[in-house]
Length: 377
Image 1 (tube, rainbow, N blue to C red):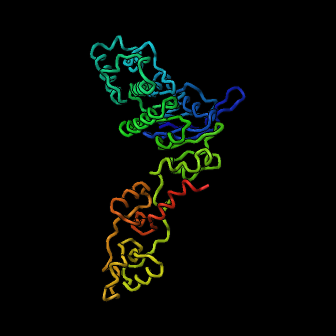
Image 2: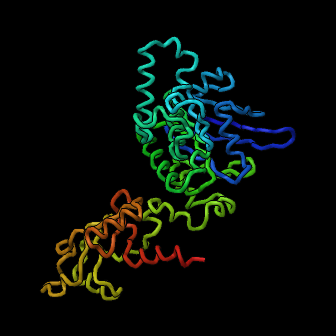
Image 3: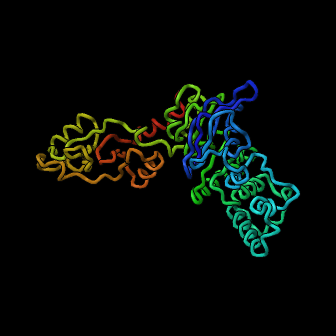
């Protein structure tokens, strides 16, 4: 949807953006983040041509935006800023309607005005404000969170394909900020816009983004999914900026493959119960996982169930139970803990996409993983 190619921006002799190239896919929410002065807001403002690059090109749907009519370009781009930017002398309704009605309100007639009012009411409901209560209020009569909701509603007024958001929630109190973040996630799931969002808050970036673009001194250091940024920072600056234990702010990004023990105690399904008992005794465990010839997980045998079996020559497949809890390698730690709790399982074998046993998560390994958050230096 949006493509930056070799963008450079200079103010006199100072270079603030240095050869930046990256793309934002359609319906993606990309977050630009970095220390103050890194160039993230400059990048954002180039998309709607509030700023012009010194060199390089920006494309929207393959078309160089420098060849587009500025007014038409901006009608298809919603813009939300930190200070909201509502006109104080206009009502909430008038603020929302100002862009779609620009230059045409006098000519649209009663039906057009009726449709515009209906759209304003729909937009207020979309951002959790009651139209009958807020349409005719002025910005000064609204709280900070309410003003920012109106600002978001106005950005969606022309149903643009692209939304630019420049630290829109940073001035709000923590409760309002979290509520608006949640609402934006819900809106994006429903409306699927292409959103470029600037923030200085890594927790906010992780919560909102499909892709995170980490910048410093006018350069892009890493542009990747939140999971990859957290688990595989590109360099020491990114690692320090993200924070050592930042992954714990988004535990749903911690996968089974990140925390599993890689050597589960297992045996083939054609092995005798005697061999199973010998293995359990030598490894000091009370159960053993059963796999087929290709290594695919089939079940589990418990020592308690076979201790009084008269014939230990019976193959394992005839005495095994189904596993109560099985995790895929991409399952999140939260889902695994929830599943283990529901079925009262002491362990969860981990399988790959082909069903092959690749690891195991036990209650003790979970405790070790969780406690490392507090004890690692």
